Amino acid sequence: MSAARLGSVPGPVMVAAGCGGTGRELLPYADQSGLDGLDLVTRSITLDARSGGPGPRVVEVPGGLVNAVGLPNPGLEHFLATELPWLVRAGARVFVSVAGATMGEYADLARRLSRAPGVAGLEVNVGAPDEAGAGLFEVREPYHAASVIAAVRREFPTDRPVLAKLRPDVSRIVEGARACHEAGATAVVVGNAVPAAFADGRPAGLSGPAISPIALRCVAEVHRALPDVPTIGCGGVHDLASARAFLDAGARGVQVGTALLNDPTTVARLRAVLLPDHLTTPEETP
Amino acid sequence: MPEERGTPAGPVHVEGEVVATKRVGAYRHLTLAAPGIPERFRAGSFVAVTVAGHVARRALWVHRVRGSSAFGPTLDVVVQVQGSGTAWLAAQPVGTRIAITGPLGRAFALPKEAVSCLLVGEGYAAAPLFPLAERLRERGCAVSLVVSAPDEAHLLSALEARRSARSVTVLTADGSVGQRGGVPDHVDELLRRSDADVVYAAGPAVVLRSAAAAAERAGAWSQVAVEVPTPCGTGLCHGCPLPVVGEDGVDRVVRACTEGPVVRGDRVRWDHL
Image (cartoon, rainbow over all chains, first blue to last red; front, side, top):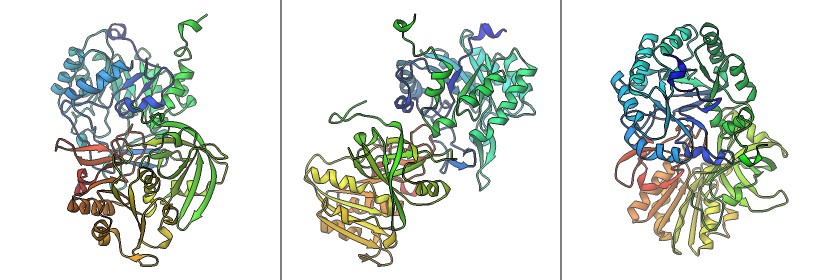
């Protein structure tokens, strides 16, 4: 399968999963076009509602945040009835992040989302820092991640993109990216929270500027080994320089996550520079 | 978004400036020029500020707002130094520019009629009760204010509230000023004496819980401003779980920064907090 047959790659700036709230919370910090045309990845949606883990869920460390939020979300039904229609009305290009406990759940999510109006694409969460803790399907082996992508691909229209979000595992990233792309992923999102722990040893994920060099290394490795596999960099993007570093390393786009928690206008500011035309109205076009 | 009485709705993210700073007891009071925020502020909402060298933001209670001053619209916040971020904030001199987002969260709901209200606060977190007392007085409510602290240094000044409150009671755990004891020791008696229909509380969980329980015993409504660490303050990260019972009786976990910080006292699942 060629990538062209599997939907186009979004970007160059996207809201990363888990850092855009329900989407509504971003609106006060958007530019004058609001969420119109914004590539937004939702928080991970599971079949059933999840209330998330106990507090503290997010703890600050030098250079980043350690989190174990536990994928709180209202479940697919409620998401389809409330959050998705709102996002679609607001004009966002919605990429639904999906997470499941079994391969069947991933397929079920993909099948039902394929019929939901306004879903621009899917992002398959195959790189949570701690699948076991979050009760997710174990995808540490590239083969397993690829199986999930294939299951999702079978249920989702080929003209819309499926993104595979991989953990920045330097030793296995090329293997994972290759397997997911061969299984039908339009692009691989290289970078997610890095497996870490809270001070008391509780499993968690590290995000923020501290992990940027790790994600960048992974993007560069994938691009060097698999130049035809579109990659989207994700990890510590917080300003133009950090975004450019990913683009220069071969990424087609970047996702912004933790930086939004520090400055909710980050995506709007990066879009203004990296998408200079998106604010131009037809009347202003020469 | 709905607008109330013509005030602009929703939070804004602005570059503000420290225009005054003074030490008050154990706290640092900062006055921040923050264009757009005072106009939108309602008592109980808060602001989040960016702290140099830190990824998480610091949520601050607002003690006072001025629609206009020599520096434009300003807001006063109370900083208690608890770590390197708040230490940085407390040390900033006049002129420092700071990114501020606000007002954030749900504010105290005001009664429609002029009823009797008991306001109970402890430590720096009592800050939102002061602008609340002013709003209530404007509505003709009889306000009884209780400010509590471990000792005198951690007491927010009750003097300035005297013009908004019918009565002010000071409690300190060590008895250094006012009555000796904490909110849980006195709240039932204070509630009985004030004959309040509504109890508003701001402070540590133990204070909120005792105020909410006293209100329930007396058949009064209660609203509490819950302080849960909010890493972003804006609702984006889902990192500030607040366990509540919904209107439908179903247990759920909401975000303290967007569905709170003010919630009905009888709705909080205190044992799970």
